[in-house]
Structures are given as C-alpha cells and as structure tokens.
Length: 82
Image 1 (spheres, helix red, strand yellow):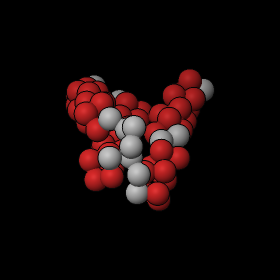
Image 2: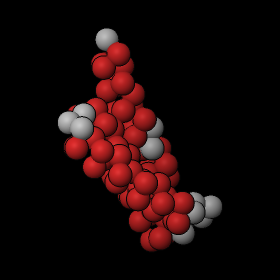
Image 3: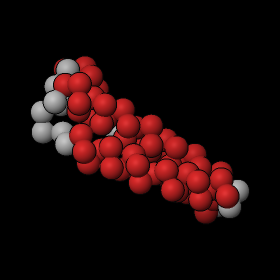
C-alpha cells in the first residue's frame, strides 16, 4: 500500500507544476520566476535519479525524473520569458 501511495505522490507532485508551466508558456511571461533556483532544483534531482538507479528503486527514479523535467522546463521558460 505504501509503495502505491509513494508512487502516486511521486507523479502528482510534478504534475502540480503544470499551472506554473501554463502561466509561463501560455502568457509568455516569467517575471518573478528565478531561473537560477529552478535550474538548481533540477540539478539537485540528478543525484536522486542516480541513487534510484543504483538501488533499483523505480519510484525514486520516476519521481525525480519527472521533477527534473518539470524543473528544467520551468527554468528554461524563466530564461526565455523572464
């Protein structure tokens, strides 16, 4: 049961970034979004992804890969439209 809850949370968390992405790319406005912070968050996801691979933990790999992608897309949007 806990595995399912963790997996669901690992998917739902990054999905919650979608409204931020819609604001940035839909309105082409990222004023107030700090690109450095979002790039840093993306970078901090990499050790977790590697950890998940080394320890064969798919929930960790999936969760932090999704976070990495969403953080990176927000960061790029902040650079493009900030």
